[in-house]
Image (cartoon, rainbow, N blue to C red; front, side, top):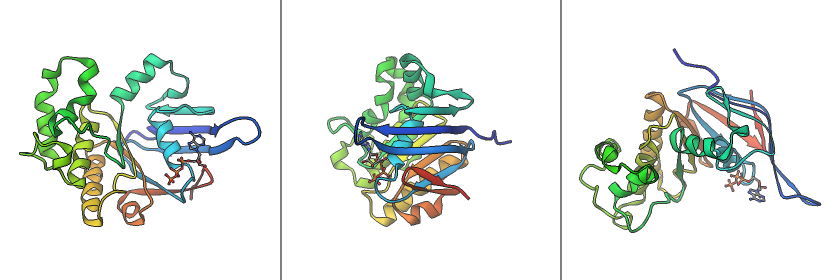
Length: 225
Ligand SMILES: Nc1ncnc2c1ncn2[C@@H]1O[C@H](COP(=O)(O)OP(=O)(O)OP(=O)(O)O)[C@@H](O)[C@H]1O
């Protein structure tokens, strides 16, 4: 049975800057996402999509409010606990892939475990993940020797290395042609069917159409039905 309300944002505000011209980037009364959901956020440029993903992934802190992940409020965690949360619970996929150019696909997938040491423990999993995203046989290629879609697959495999419950993807298909983008969206959908909670920000209505639920943001506020 699905556990409900895996991600809950309550009275969350994010304000950038101070003084005469602060920017209110997000203003959320209540937003709930279930475990295993595949949710997209859409809306015009500047409506707060990236800010929202960054708050859920603890890459940034809210100005006020509570963000519960699996019942724990990450908005009031200390830095050490947040580090563990970022490492173990939330995996990020970015529009521009953010791979390290001098490392092979396989080495890039292993990057999240470098700070943990004990690389050997993750070697088989990294190879398995590359096979699972359709890159078996291309483990030793550098990012420059892979297509955009293949690089994004490496980024998805990297995000999965430490078995996070949540995948956050900010415009994951933004640099890809529509067929390749559909492949990446299909891969993210499959992950949600396997139990991961997948949250993406996208401009592309076709990508949003693939998701179980789409939430439109306007001026930092979700338009909920
Ligand atoms: N570090 C920052 N300092 C000041 N303002 C910021 C900062 N980051 C974002 N903003 C502002 O917050 C608002 C929301 O930005 P955000 O990047 O979340 O929007 P977005 O919906 O992801 O936009 P896009 O679709 O163009 O990527 C915008 O008005 C933006 O200018």
